[in-house]
Amino acid sequence: MKYVISHIRTFGKFSISLPVALTAYTGYILFDGQLSFFGLLVAVGIFFLSAGASALNQLQEKKYDAMMQRTNDRPLPSGNFGLSEALSLIILFLVLGTLALMPFGWKAVFWGWMGVFWYNLIYTPMKRWSAFSVFPGAIVGAIPPIAGWMAAGGSILDVRIHFLALFFFLGQMPHFWLLVLKYGKDYKRAGFPVITDVLSKEQINRINLIWFLATFISALFLPIFNVITNRPLTWVIGVSTIIMMAWSVRITMQVQKDGQSIHLRKMFMYFNSFYLWVMILIYADQI
Image 1 (cartoon, rainbow, N blue to C red):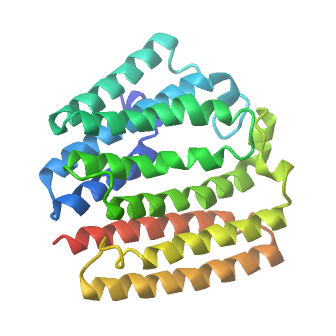
Image 2 (cartoon, rainbow, N blue to C red):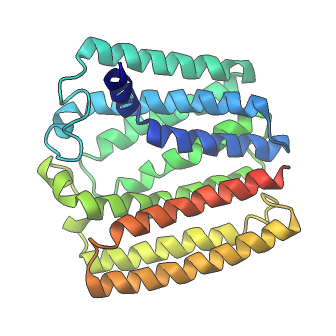
C-alpha cells in the first residue's frame, strides 16, 4: 500500500504541488486580510489541479522521461502505472481540484484551470523546440496567487496582486535554470533543447545572478505595494533581502571559481527557502 501511495505522490508531484498551493493561499489571504479556513479550501483546489497538471505532463512526456536518469523511475516509464491508472488519477485530481474551487465562483475555477492550460498546452510542447521556454513557462508560477486572490473576491486590476504575481514570476527563471545546469545532460539525452547549447555556463551564472537580484529586489517593494503592511515585518523583509542579495553575489563568485556542481544544490535550496520565508512573513502580516 505504501508503494502505491508513493507512486501516486510522485505522479502528482506532491512536493511541487504543495508549495504551489501555498502561493494560492497567499493570494487569498492578501485580499481577505486574515488567515482563513476558506483560503485553505482554495489551496486544496489548486493543489489537486497542480497535481493533475503534473500527472498529465508525465503522460505527455512519458517517452522522454524514460530517456532521462532523473525521471525514468516515475510511475509511467517504470511500468508501475498503466494508461488506465494514469488517466483515472489525472481525472480524479482535476475533478477534486475543480470541486474545491467551485464554491468560490467561476473566476476561481477559470484561473485554476488557466494554470493547467498554460502548463500542459503551451509550456510543455514549447519545451521540445525552444531552450527559452522558461520565459512563457514562468507564467505558470504567477497564476496560482492570482487564482487565490480571485477566489477571495479580489479585482484583477488591483496593483497588489499584480506585484505579488510578478514576485513569483521572477523566481521561476533561476529556479528552472539551476535545474538545467544540474540535469542538462539528462535533458539533452532526451532531445530537449537546453540553454547550455546557446550560452556558456559562465554566461548562465551571470544571468542567473541578475535574476536572483531582481527577485530579491522585488521583495523590497512588497511593503511599498501594501503586500506587507506591518512595520516590524517590513524591517525583517528588508534585512532578509539584503542578506540574500549579498549571498547571491558571494555564491556566484564561488561558482565561477570552483565550478557549479558543488554549489547547485545549496543555491537551489537557499533560493526556494527565501520564497517560503516571504510567504511566512505575508501570513504573519495577517495575524
